[in-house]
Length: 330
Image 1 (cartoon, rainbow, N blue to C red):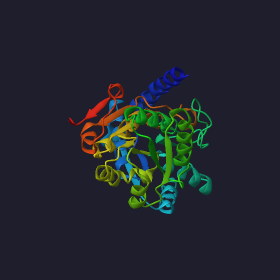
Image 2 (image 1 turned 120 degrees about the vertical axis):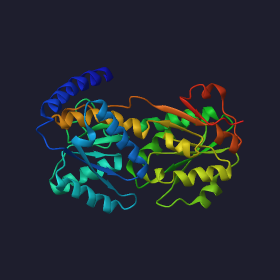
Image 3 (image 1 turned 90 degrees about the vertical axis):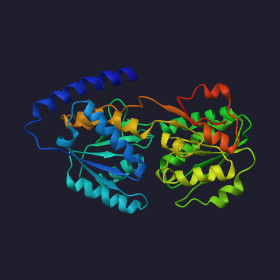
Image 4 (image 1 turned 90 degrees about the horizontal axis):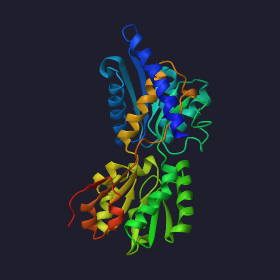
């Protein structure tokens, strides 16, 4: 099935690039709205720009990006979504699941519509945003980052890497649909892994005292998909070092900040991949007919310096699976 997606995408891509080349001189610059909830997600925009350049676009001359960012207030995010729909951009890039879902609600409430490319969304089918991966059938297409289903795999890698760990505190946000779904997936995985999992709702402000009280001698922290948790990366990295607690994250920037490890699709890669679908829509194709793609690659990264600092030894067999190891450790 994945091969069918790729072949179909390449056929559409060729048509889109032909249209782009033919109409380049006559058209005004295309206007693209960008909606995001966390500044670290701007790496996706860099990926989009470079991906479009590699597809033959002259980004600086032919495209105008209108970036809307709201990190905390969901009501303000909804207001931005309505404003973007009223602006009638050529398309909107939603830089995550919450952004895409807010745009979906805004379309329903206003009766306005603009094609949307979601750039990394954990479960577009489960949440009803699309009808199928092969043919979305809605105003939405994009790159599904697969992070919902990867939650169990991340827990498995984490426990295999640290066999002495007997408890994992799972950080999630109960107000975010995909975070709740990921928590359920993680709980189901416990049955086969034989480790205790303790869900911890981070809310909107991380209670580090309560988190420290929960942690035992052989405890680890696992973060689940949530734009709110993404915004807590620095706090969690500092907490990890202060309490000698290993943290398994999702993104490469989290490992760079000091998480012990991460497994998932990077923001940059998601943006670079989504450039294909953006080019197809700019080429006149309907979002409803453009297949949703899964990540081209997933990265398992480890920070050896963090391992040395918090005093943990990593399983050698698991370390061989790492795509990138940061630091030298001891």
